[in-house]
Image (cartoon, rainbow, N blue to C red; front, side, top):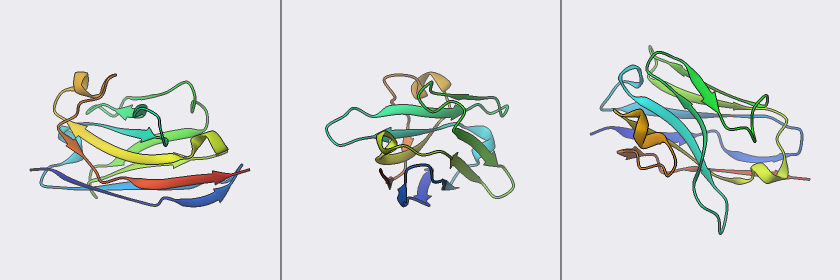
Length: 123
């Protein structure tokens, strides 16, 4: 059973940066397809970025050029570096993992979810 624990959320002003971390246990990030998702109040959970087992990444158009997904296989941690944050980035952010990339695609249904970390961006 894989457990995912996010950290690094908080409150920042527009234009600021945050780095989210997702520590994995019970499995290794190198063997799973992993991703970051977010859900704003009243909204649906949407994909932000995914990283394949090979390390290839893909980010949503809404965050392209501002967010970067990466992983440290040795530390078994997934990261999301968020720069130039905007108020519309405010949401609960979740990391997820699945043996199949297809389950990370919309609508996401990965086998494993973290509990989430709140990101609030003020204008």
